[in-house]
Length: 345
Image (cartoon, rainbow, N blue to C red; front, side):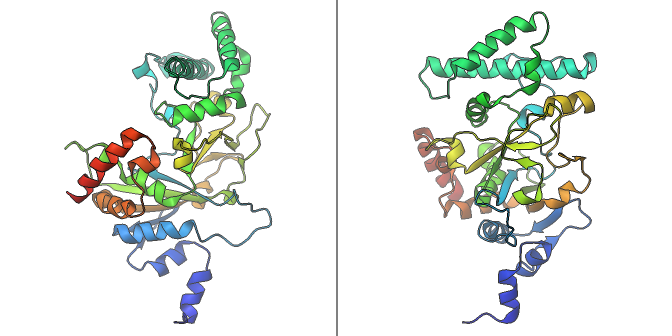
């Protein structure tokens, strides 16, 4: 059957709010909104729309490459900010024994220095313990040399080069730690929209307590990399850099990062940014041109009621998106068997 003119037009239209509204009549465009926000009333339309993003690109641009398409991030709570795990709470490392001082009692410079110190020593402990039990962790002797110098210098005056933390030598272990639940300053994205939908919805599986509230909305954020001029693929040597870097972390076969089609993003001048602004940079609003009020307009926000999360997971399971697919291990083979039973219960 040959599609009519309207259908052909929809097929070749670039993705935007108008396209989504015409393709999914039951979806609701949220207005006013500070981004391109669409709410879906059912999981099937929500996932169908997301699936199209990965195969339907924006109009071709000369500078576009195979690595500059769409990126996605799933949030259980659609109100969450876009901050790395180490920058979301006042005490990200307290549970590991590395408490930070109260921000009100120190200068901004002293605070970011203490943050870097806690991050570095946390990574040292992560590497040391993993290496002790012969677990792969991208062990780097040069990092330990740098840590020894930092420990010695921090007793007198802070090792000034840590303004640049983390240097490229830290990227592999940072990526490994990030994907094994260590708070870091890396922000996770995936180039697979459906994997991001799994992360948005799987909270209902991870936390099966009666205390989990399901009266809000979950979401998947999407943006096209060519729309953010400050998303760089090469490190910036400028101390005052306000750019975001796509971290060139090594993704080994069978690793969490590889299985999740992951992309890690880092603000290169986060320490200086904190010193000047008393807060950490937010991916939504802080970039290479400073605080950009229109930056968030470049993002798509697709939302779904949390009450429909399990329905979404059932559909994703038919595409083999499940615990062992995103966290490959024999333990998660067993977990996935429990998960499949839970989905049908």
